[in-house]
Amino acid sequence: MQEGVTRTPNANIRLVNESPNATVSFISEGYEAGAFFLYETNGVIQTDEQLAAYQALEGRASAQLGDLVYVDTNNDGKINNDDRVYKGSGLPDFEYGFNLNWNLGDFDLSMNWYGTVGAEVLNGNKANAYNFERHQDLVNMWTPGNPTSQIPLYRGDAGGDHPNYSGLTDYWLENGDYLRLKQITIGYALPKDVTEKIGLDKFRLSFSAQNALTFTKYSGYDPEVGGNNVARQGIDNSRYPVSCDIYFRSKN
Image (cartoon, rainbow, N blue to C red; front, side, top):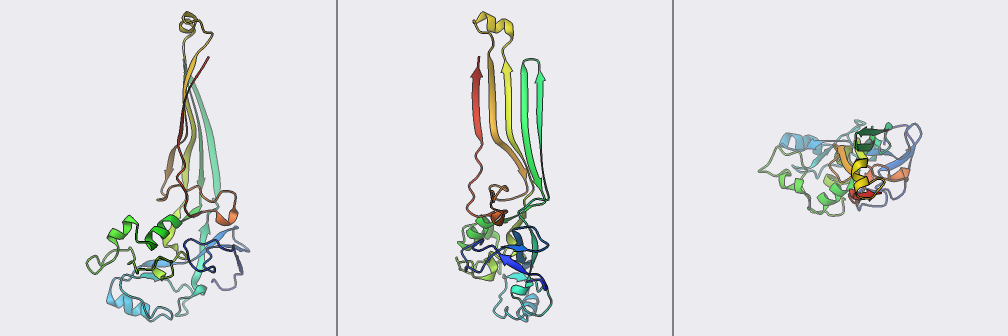
């Protein structure tokens, strides 16, 4: 990895089913906890000239057209673990939220919004789907008949051991910024003259929803991944979609 930087891997924090040493999350002085150190990539090999240049790197003699290009970040003519570089983390630069409340006549509205900025997410669900040749993107992967595609070719290895779909690259890294409507309630209180006619002091109807809207560029199910485990922040492995809960209530 980067010269002069000592890192302690967060054990077994992997993106796909690779070897136990295929860790993506680290503790390192000067970086946030759970920092990602990954291979930087630069598209797909599309021409014979690109292929010849890439095969000249130590460790890439068996590369083929359609393979993912790993960047020799330290310019030593090799592709190995020393080329992995810092690529952010699942911890946001800052979090924000705001509450809004309105009352207009007999209607009321309340909303709670929450968001984060500056986090990255490793899309493990996408990586695993690629490895099992089940992702929709692979319809447009590189082939001799589709030579300008930037989607690396499937090499028939479901274990993530082939460099094309390894979980150790920034190919799976995405912007984790999001803004979510955590809670919204819309209410209507019947006018007093109406409630008196039906023998009630008051009567209110309300509609509520939790997690009703999420605005994000992340292509996975949910950018809010990792929970309270710092080592797993930003690592989206088998994450179920956040449910949207809807309630209708009446109160008198």
